[in-house]
Amino acid sequence: MCGIVGYVGNKDAYPILIKGLHRLEYRGYDSAGVALINPVGKLNVYKTKGKVAELEHFVTNKDVSGTIGIAHTRWATHGEPSDVNAHPHYSENGQIALIHNGIIENYGVLKTMLMGKGYTFRSDTDTEVLVQFIDYLRNENQCTLFEAVQAALNQVIGAYAIAVLDKDNNNEIIAARKSSPLVIGIGDGEYFLASDATPIVEYVQNVVYLNDGEIAVINRNKPLKIVNLDNIESKIDIRKLEMNISELEKGGYPHFMLKEIFEQPRTITDCIRGRINLEGTEVILSGILDNKDRFLNARRIIFVACGTSWHAGLIGEYLFEDFCGIEVKVEYASEFRYRNPVIHNDDIVIAISQSGETADTLAAIELAKSKGAFVYGICNVVGSSIARATHSGTYIHVGPEIGVASTKAFTGQVTVLVMMAMMIARLKGRIDDAKYREVLKGLLVMPEKIKEALAQHEHIKDVSAIFTYAHNFLYLGRGCNYPTAMEGALKLKEISYIHAEGYPAAEMKHGPIALIDNEMPTIVIATNVSIYEKTISNIQEIKSRGGKVIAVVTTGDSVVSKMADHCIWVPETTECLTPLLSSIPLQLFAYYIAVNKGRDVDQPRNLAKSVTVE
Ligand code: F6R
Image 1: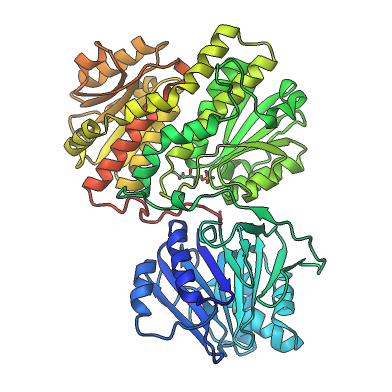
Image 2 (image 1 turned 135 degrees about the vertical axis):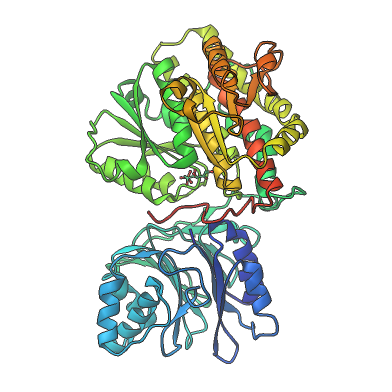
């Protein structure tokens, strides 16, 4: 969702804030703004609808001096994207400025109360209500900004990460979080603040992640102080950032998405490094080892996730049922959290999340914990809220994913799920040596095979050019490639805005086949060995109704290639690993179609990378 950056120290704040906003733009990009206190104590607030580049243009020739400031890039929740609804918001008297990521649910009641006290409002946002409420409490209680923020947050219902400035105190930023992430970078006489570590990593390595219900007093002349809403001081837990600055650049690619697609040989290597031995005879994940008995005795595994991560969970269902003999459920976190799901204390809930910040997934974790379940996390972002809220877990270690459409995180998640399934199956004595080694060796050579799949990019680009103007697509797969088909369809929808449906191929005849004509192309994944013949029948059904077929097939396939209109080849691998290869051409296909259509690939309309509101 929205991105927050803050700086207080001895350097000019503006360049640091703008660079930080660019790094965070993937979180939201419908408006942007900055607030700075200049050397003579004037609070300057500049904000505008549009992307960060438009903000930069807007502030040309304006006073951007000052060594303290806060900045924001927005993904609208309350109030349309507009100049006036952009953050920072400031109190009517111009004393306090505030940026916010999240939703204040009781803003209506607070606004009515404040209007009764004579406050007027410029915007439609919940955030303006919060800043005015803080201002009101400060005047009413004659207290410090910190005390007013603490008092306000004790009365606020909702989710927030906020940063607040007081025009009369150019040394201090007050920051607080509840259900929305915030990280503080600690430098020498300077502090950085951000929604995630990407704007901070080029300046400092030492960071502190705020916990829910904590308020930080960030003063350039004092050590960092963190207290909770009940005024109990927290221990400062300094962590070291592992991120590398070059991971945050496009590295010569036109888009982050393309860079991330092409990174997959390396990200899979990073994901399996130190987990599978070089001979491919053993996989060890410490999270499983530490909780061996729980996994051995698990009654069920329940995956909770959203979007692409949910698709990875569906592949997990095939893996864990087939290899481990454990009953599996796969739940949309947003549905799970609002049901009253039956959870036994010997169930394991596995939360999958690239960002580790998805609000619905976090809420599902809390619900599962409250019902006594053991919760395991599969996350990418180290130190993220989900990584910290779960009892144990495995990181996918694919590096920062900046493109809004998830690519390398999906293959990282599937890789971790395969390793988990192999390890548990082995511990349960349910897999023979030959199969176990075949899968592990398959993973070891996967980076090379992904390179081969990527080498088809020119061909995929040519095929995409033929279909750029189709209005609808059907994606079909069977077995573990049915979720891959859904993932391919999601990629196309997100970045090209073309309607696409992912379906289990055999379900065609129960309805979707009625859609088939020569204007409805179908992408069929035909790489599964066990149900290859069945998939061939499905292709025939489409062809005999005049449909166009683009088939993803295994290198050397001579049957489907005669039937399909276009084929895209991927190398052979063991069946349970085929999603790692068949997903690659689908990512590239969606990418090239979106580029052909002139779409904003990395920042598609209406989307944000990290969905921290429900
Ligand atoms: C799709 C995509 C989204 C995310 C979903 C969950 O390309 O990026 O569907 O997968 O919002 O996000 P995480 O995995 O961060 O919980």
